[in-house]
Length: 171
Image (spheres, rainbow, N blue to C red):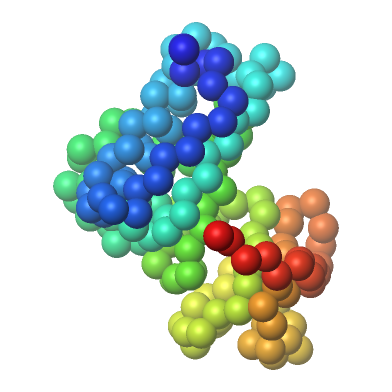
C-alpha cells in the first residue's frame, strides 16, 4: 500500500535502542515531508497527517540531539527545518514525554498547543511556567495537579485552562 494511503500506522519501539527509535521516527516523518514538498502538496491541498511520538526526548526532538553537531549533520533536512515548515504542509507532531526540559527548544517554540500533567521536577515546572506564561497562582495549581488533570495552553485562547480526563487503565 502506498504510504500516502495509510491512515493509521502504529510502530512499537519499546524494545529497540534509542538510535533505532529515533531513526524510524525521522524516516517516516521526513519521507512524508519530502513527498509533500517535492509534489507541492501544501495548504488546503494536503490531507492533515499527525505523527504521535511517545518518549520524544529519546528521539531527534530532544534538547540534547538539537545541540548535537552529528545529529544535525546526519539529518537531511533537519528535524528543526521540518518543524518550522510542517504546518504549511498540514503535518503535525504530537510529542509526549515526562521530561519537559529534555524536549528541543524548536519543538516547544512551534507547539501551538501544550497539554501538561503533573510534573515532579522543579526545573520542568519552572520551564513550563515560563514557556506558557503562568501566573504564580497558576504555577501553584500546576504543582497540585492530580492524575487525569491537565493544564492546557493553546494559541487560540489567551489564558491556560485545566481539563479533567477519566483515568483509564491500559491493558
